[in-house]
Image (cartoon, rainbow, N blue to C red; front, side, top):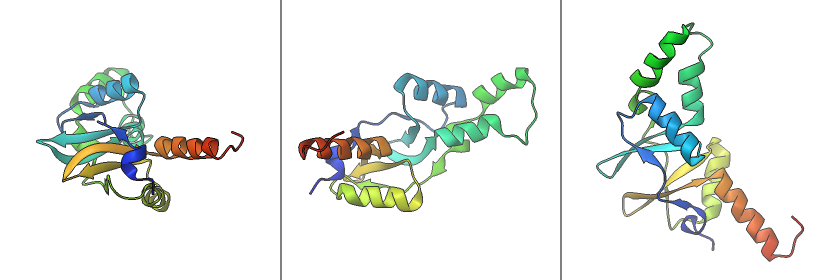
Length: 142
């Protein structure tokens, strides 16, 4: 059995609840990721996805001046835009369970926990990478 721990990204990028929207965007760009976990005192509080960021920045229902962009980037926090208490998966769970949950709920990732602490994140990219690796091991064309 291939476990979630076998395919996950360990030590995921994370921030605290008071991180600004600008800081979150910077983390996503610097680390080429689409999800940032919100963790404080070793507790998972939530997750901020690229979709959360796009909604916060580009709402078609809010008209604002360019000068207000800086206020938005510095004034909106992770806590304001995160999904609270996201679904998680245990590091020892089968990787297929992670794939099924992500497909069913249309999630791009799941935080991975072990012993109550966040140890990683499993993303669609991790699952696709595992699939490609399995095909290569079977001698399938890629």
